[in-house]
Length: 343
Image (cartoon, rainbow, N blue to C red):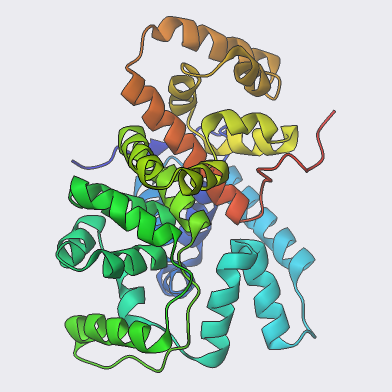
């Protein structure tokens, strides 16, 4: 079913992805294509969908986006730095230290994992079909290389009786030796293009944090089942995973600046559904970071919505958390509540 058009009223506060979509629609096909070459598959999908849905963009909105972009470029140009230092700085700010580290190494050393990297551009269902009959250790390695939200979608499509074993293997994975990684990469590369992958170094993938990140994106019913099964096998490991998971109630720890930034990115309907399952303290956290009128409207919407299925509430909360984690990875908010607050 085709997506509905997204009409933007003149007073509509533009989200980051909407500003990016307007900018790419403004600069022309060739330049937009060059920009999108440097984006990851998930970013391309979201940005492309937003571009396709935009309509009713006013001249004032375009001018504001271009002015913001010009100001950003003028303030952040870093001429004179060594190329590697500049690239590392930009990527760390955009992706965070952990994700940026391995990417910088691949850029600087020219050692890309083409076969495995190709999976990041595939639909989760296609990946699941490709790997479902592989050994659980192979599946664990593949999921560890994917973005956590994509890995969660793939995991949900795999046989239920294999999920716990796979997550256990991800959590206890401490790295992949070069020969094992090269063999896996070459198999995938031949399957995609008939070529051979380049030489690969040992890669630090997996671990308890990766397992927690993947479970953060899974449906609550799947997440609970896997954690219960891991608890039966290794209670200490299960607790370690849960300690690293970021759940909806943890938004209480986000500072006011972060909540305000999050409110600009989350759809109102999604937030209303998510807050149906929140306690009063968390609701007030959001209300106090809205204008008085917006908070009153949100309260009215919560009352008017009536009973909501638990599965719908959990799905909405997962969606809000996905936005929060993406913004945290981009350095736009802090999930630890350490930033400054507005007064």
